[in-house]
Length: 254
Image (cartoon, rainbow, N blue to C red; front, side, top):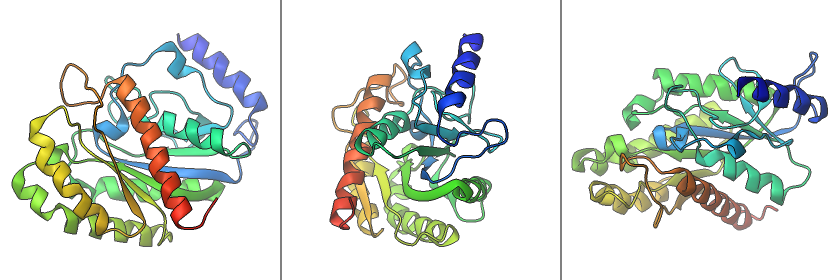
């Protein structure tokens, strides 16, 4: 398996426009920041098809190097990291934009609360640093956020809109991207304990200009009943893209 991945990595690098090979860095990447907790990082079962790179999709690895994107994209918990929604999202972007090369910037970390993403925290600081490094090779197109399992209690849910909007406002400021779209996914409908959080989410989105809520209705879970399964994450990625396109059209972008 490792040998196969290395061969794919090298061969793809020979043909990928601007790929980091022999000292050459990519340029004009269309960047997407991926933040939140485990359902953004992805815990779907990895299959062979998930490790076949697309020639126009890169990811920023843990060493801040651009490499061909393949699942798992995230590296927060290597033993359990798996398929995430970002891969299908990126495939939708490049299918809609034949000249675009996407750069995914994975920063999500499983088991984290919103307070652990507050400005100044280790996770927040790392995300800003990685995103700034990525922006040397392109421009930020959107922020993809999925988090809330760690804030699904009634007490934390009640204050979530204020805390979330403050975090996003500071993040946009720190990245000099005041109007960048923000996509916010619902928690799984398969768990009753998340119903209150999902009911609150429209308020959180309303508090953030140029943002959209992404429905998770009908999506299935792994056996743990916490994480979306592989099939669900593929569908979720498409829904994130559809929400992103609606925001772009509303802003008069093509």
